[in-house]
Image 1 (cartoon, helix red, strand yellow):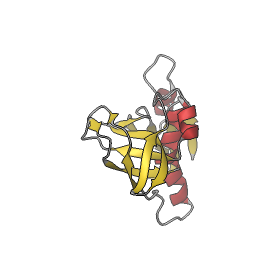
Image 2 (spheres, helix red, strand yellow):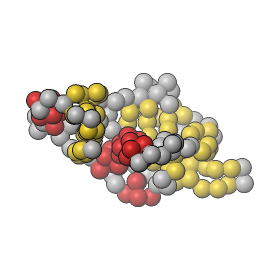
Image 3 (spheres, one colour):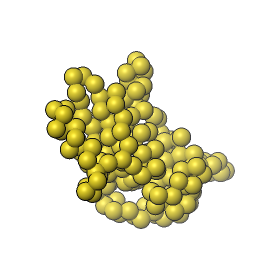
Length: 158
């Protein structure tokens, strides 16, 4: 497996996908409707997997958890490489772009009514401290543009 980080977006310095294509690899996908991590790419070359992750630290960490870790676990023979989710109630509303799954960094804790999830802070992908404070990733569905406080969402614990 080859894993790259950065150089996979649309800027004039983002040359990874072009270089891989020129090398004759089979590109499976480039750009995924998720946030963070939209410019993620995946290719195969002679049976070897190639993951090209965004360069932004939070985007890299999230896409590693969602794409690379499951692939590595599957390669190691794990029967269920996808992380299980738990249900938690959001303590505050979350606004997002409809049509894209959003991974919200959250801190999950117990309450007398079950698990609650609170945003770990500013969700800008350049702010690494929110990943450090998070112990879960809330998966906000693509078909919604807003999740209200008090709604239950799926959480992958990290």
